[in-house]
Length: 154
Image (cartoon, rainbow, N blue to C red; front, top):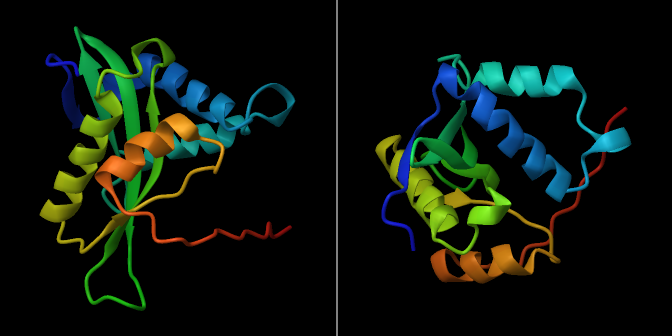
């Protein structure tokens, strides 16, 4: 576990270091080269972090003056709760820094932000093949057996 990692809200000046992490995250999920996200999506994602009207937020892990990881999350209403819930949409640690507790610290940072915002729950999803991620997630949250379905609208 790293002791020098600092979790903080993203800042505009972070873009040059955030972008390689974002690209690495997307590549991990097969979104690179011909399947890369269109640039307008990345640009809009970045801008949403700084728009107070948006429910989308970002934390970064900083270690020795360099960004080591990111967590993007958003708040939304639920039909089963009175208070909003928090969806942890993206979590990524630089590949060469994995296994040092940065992902766990980012998750805890999201927990703290969600608690401060009055959310009643934080949840996320991952691919079944993400064994390293799931090993961490099983320690910091409860898998409740849900399966995710999706249908793209054209």
